[in-house]
Amino acid sequence: MEVAGLALSLSGATFAVVLRNVLVAVVLGAVALDIFLRLSSHRAGRVEVPAPMPTWVRPVAIALSVVEVAALVEAVNSPVRFDDAGFEYMHWALAAIALVAAYALQVRLLRSVGRKSRALESP
Image 1 (cartoon, helix red, strand yellow):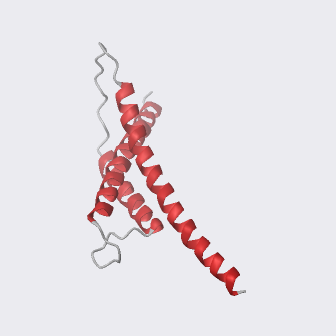
Image 2 (image 1 turned 30 degrees about the vertical axis):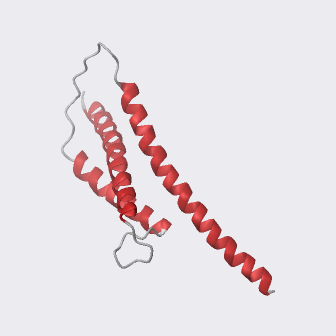
């Protein structure tokens, strides 16, 4: 019985470490995807004037990205507070990278939603 309990407790810790690494990989993959989409969207010789962005897009994108990154940090139990065991400044850097990536993706998403809603409102 004790051996089974020990095996289950160790597998839970292993699962938590693997899940944390998977979530960090997802965030870094999102950053790489954003860079790829940004570079692939620029075509040579084509100048496009972007439509004006609605004023509500940036504040909503900031709020959503902060909530998403806070949930991600709490979900993976990343030690970002100074009094947490295992605190390192690298965790702050990962959270900042995730925040920038989330903000960029949210702005792009909300800008497209704003364009579609404006297109629906026009006669």
